[in-house]
Image 1 (spheres, rainbow, N blue to C red):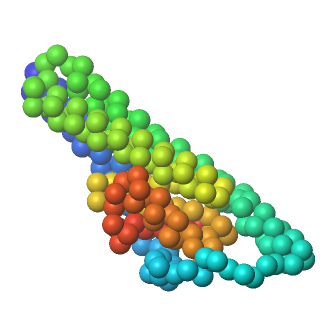
Image 2: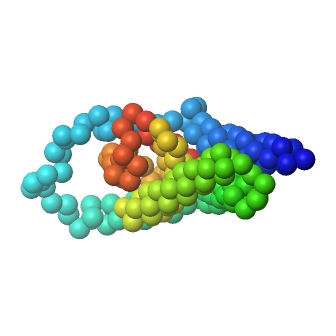
Image 3: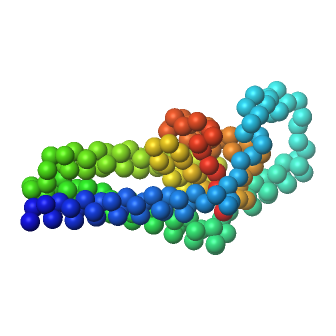
Length: 190
């Protein structure tokens, strides 16, 4: 009887982890990946020591364009809300299952250690995802979703907020928090 309970709990953990991997795969669909050419120009100094000043008319136009670019469409808002909700639901399920394994007195020490390790990894990933999302919002994105794994990261941002240097800003932010190489960071525009 003890073995069956342990197998059921472990099978539940595997299903929950599979769901998390599937959600990550769905959110990082390869058909809409975008990498800007400016990300390859790391040493570009196009804005350094610029002596060009914009006239008041040009400043007004730029301010209008910037305010238009930072507002989400209804479809984008719904997408971000749904994706964030699904991600949080999957992560909560995995955390709940791992805690159940830890609380079972008849679970083996090996199962408890594995559950504790998975729980720790997931909690670290959630904290890192939140740090990346918060930092990107502070840098001017109205909304974003970060999906982080051990070896890669996918950041989803509104297409109308991507500018010339946005890819570099996103990748630098992810590198700072998750210490991932630029080629393992995907940017998806919705």
